[in-house]
Image 1 (cartoon, one colour):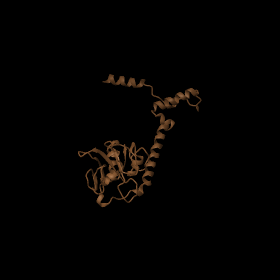
Image 2 (spheres, helix red, strand yellow):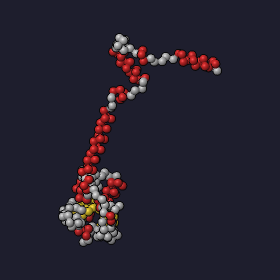
Image 3 (cartoon, rainbow, N blue to C red):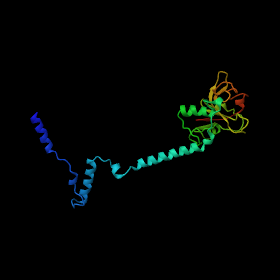
Image 4 (tube, rainbow, N blue to C red):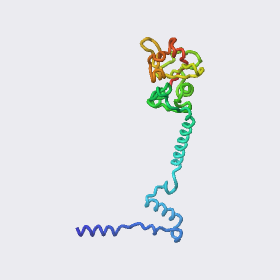
Length: 226
């Protein structure tokens, strides 16, 4: 054991430890400019100082932080701009989805398409008429202001739009999703309605058909494929 300890002590005595005061500096007149650069590099490496901390923050990191701040500010401004549209649900409709909210739930929250409060042409906006005008995808049946009957242009999943209310002029005020042709040969859709207090493809509040003379059939105006 004594021999082993002596060996360790002998090895320790042979190790050269770095003395930072031994580096040449301009003040003591030692070393050239090349020596100074070498000393700085040695000092940086031995002290394990990341270059970013010595030379300042990386530009890409700064730009990313600034971009994140700008995006957060834009999102807040958008929410504040639409704050007046946000209101408490009517007691009878609490925890229910209106027609556009139902489509946003299906295609946005469940299917991953982007959502927005302010129409921008690349995301699904909040209201039915905005979805027709600026949601992503393509319009398969344009709104001509009359009952749409071009059913051959429809595919399952298309958004279908209606001028169903009588108190808002000719503005699109209802949206649903096309399901296809049912066993009776009719073009059926699903939507969320106040009368049904939620989504339905039944006949409560009007038959869920695009063809015929029912309430929704005669108010069917347009379609969009996301």
